[in-house]
Length: 228
Ligand code: CA
Image (cartoon, rainbow, N blue to C red; front, side, top):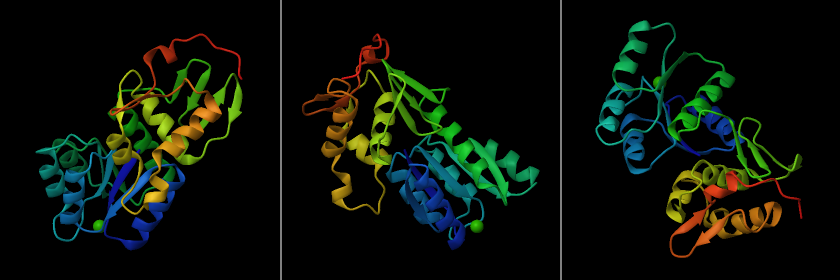
């Protein structure tokens, strides 16, 4: 999942970026309103964290302009206890808001909920045959046994599982899973998919040549099968 953070306080921007990456998100950032708007219009982010007080263009303006083009989930960072701000944010089309200063675990929990809703899944666990993704713990079990995945492998599996039964294009995967700062080596999708197949079984992810990757809908209904 790829998140945009629009925040002009350097330390907060840095800390948020680090915390979100530790949670397995790809993270882009902007430290002013116009840059934030340009990025939010350009990329189909899974969520945007948007500060209200920003240089160049305030968060309300960014949100209004964004809503003319995209329905991206937006979490507004407002002044603490400013009821007017919260009402205004919801009226303007924000999906959630959090007063500053906030506790990081609360922001992370709200983001997880936003991203889940954006992808139409209310639960934090996804079952694919005998494989269970625990999205909160970012852990995978196969036939009850933990399978060690890298953060990137988990992110790819999670995205495909959320869209199971659909072909997900390589472009879509790149857009949702890799951030603006990453070099091309970390972007080698095929290598990650190869590793996932090696760890979880060759049949889990199918390649649709010229189209992308797919976890078949039947995978979620399949009987648990022996590991091996
Ligand atoms: Ca600010």
